[in-house]
Image 1 (cartoon, rainbow, N blue to C red):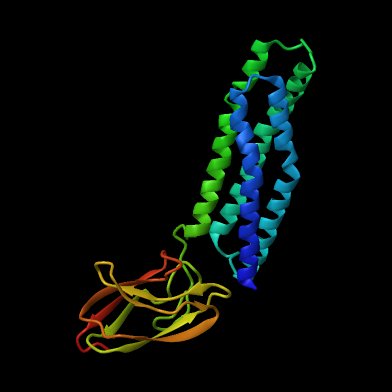
Image 2 (cartoon, rainbow, N blue to C red; image 1 turned 90 degrees about the vertical axis):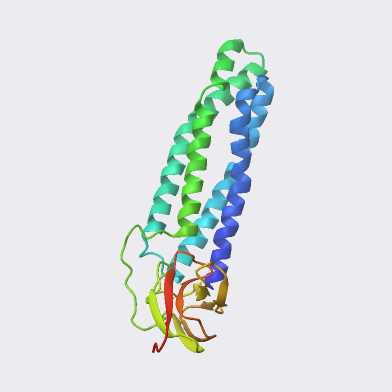
Length: 259
């Protein structure tokens, strides 16, 4: 079920980008328009996408909240920061865009109907304000910040509480429980990997110091334990990561006579 709710969340994000992309296009297009009728039509087009936009926001929030419960993400700082940025960005964009769109739309419709209450110079001044750029910066900045937090899931220096056991998988997506493992050089060995992260996929991928793949373990969805049969390693130190979460890192040291 976890993957399905992540799918719902991503679907909501995609729908939001499509619907809100219309409003963003209109926001950046208006400063270049001078025809009141075209300005009024553009604003009407933007307004027509608002119900769909809020529907997509509801969908992405529903999928994200349920997935967070299933994946036990609420103990991570990055998810709370993502929500805070989403709320702040939404409030900021509404404050910047709502009044400006309403004022420009009202004047544009009046001028299109023949009103002389506002001169063309005044109308041009309303369109050439810095407000559209500010709206775009706030919206894009918030989106980039949220995408960064979702993809990289930074821990902000928080210590990760982990379970005991050699080569045990992540207690969460931030770290392996055993970041340093010693194995005998020149002999195949078994690596027991316990993914204790509910509904989330992890694995162990071993590489050489030069970055070449040495062994890539099967992805497992937690909670699940798997035993990897790893081929013999020459004496040396080998970094290992999770293929999906590269921030999860550790090292395997193959030593002569190791246990």
